[in-house]
Image 1 (cartoon, rainbow, N blue to C red):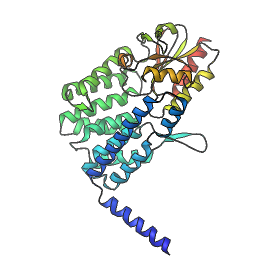
Image 2 (cartoon, rainbow, N blue to C red):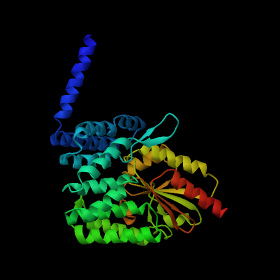
Image 3 (spheres, rainbow, N blue to C red):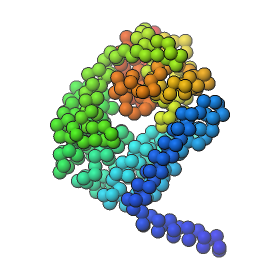
Image 4 (cartoon, rainbow, N blue to C red):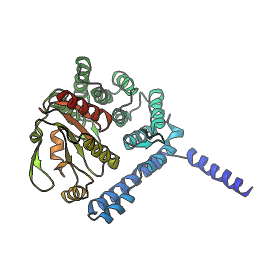
Length: 359
């Protein structure tokens, strides 16, 4: 009976907490995550020995913990306008998080919550003045239902600037549909609208105009069928390294660092792909953004088994307009681009097709 009373009391406290959740609670959770992530980054960068690396890995803050806290705060109030911005933050935090199922499959960690946020936006917030961050968060999550929401916002929202941000977000979603004539036409139309109507709007620290210009550069130089620009730099040992040196081989070019979301899983996938294609005309070239000492440790410990450009200041990444890690590009033997996107099965299937075709 005492246990039952305790359970009822705990439930009552939870209900009270939910009913009194406020914007201040959302701000507190966001700041707590930022502080924890910043502290961990400093510890991780300082870790040079295997023991220190292991301790740093164990101390890495769990984004799922903060995501669940934020969801508890905002989920009872998704129809209220104050939840739009923290909901966008939640989508950004969880976009790369996955859950490993018992059958070996992998599913998004916050699929149901993300669907509830999209539904709330479509039902309650299509006229909200706070939609700019949400538009970009929806685009980065790449859900099939996102495009129709963004297109409605860019057509019907009363604020032309938010229309422009929605147009930019729609262009980013359309990018995943391929480079055929009709998607490309819509993509260019939306980018033009974004530049005209929202050039000075900032998403985080970056202006819409800069994001749109980067997308135009990608269309001209980094879409499927284009010859990838050569990269020139040095590896972890300071030796000259060029992307051109992979001529004649199918190449997986991966932009990464050890602090990106799901880094352990991405490294495992890439190492497995390298092993799978061993003995064939295939190579992996990384563009790594860790401090040089950290990259040398990762290579010495065989955490990464491929050559890497050392790019701690992200100069090479900027040449390819990389803003989100990880990113993978699959190139044929002439550096022609055949895939640009996230690591995983689609990248590997593209590499396999190119290798089979060459054979």
